[in-house]
Length: 145
Image 1: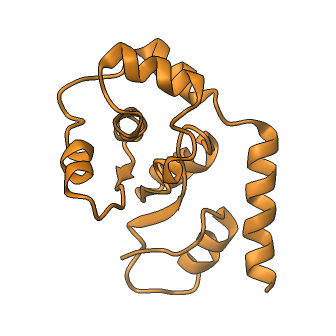
Image 2 (image 1 turned 90 degrees about the horizontal axis):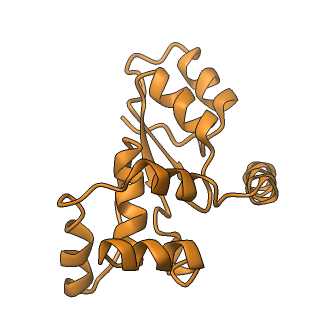
Image 3 (image 1 turned 120 degrees about the vertical axis):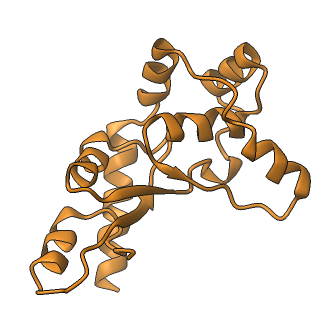
């Protein structure tokens, strides 16, 4: 069962407290190295709700960022593979949308390596407080309209 809560804990709690008979098991919201909200992800994981990464590779907008390029070179993997592997190591459900067969194959090839702890820390630090604030404002605005 999917809980379309857009990552908001209050919405999730209201849903669960509404006497539903089947509890949500997956919540999908935007999460990537460039929109990482660890407390939000941990909240749902503690509740036994899997986190599904929406925009896990950010539509490719961040592939040219220096940290992604550096890790791509270090691991001999594409930027998409680096970002997908990060999500996998965070225990998120990661899906990359593409219609290109070569990218489909590439995106599946993330199980043959691990990102080192120091590289995970680098990726964890790419989201700014301003990025999160803007995202939260967009989520709130979408609920109002």
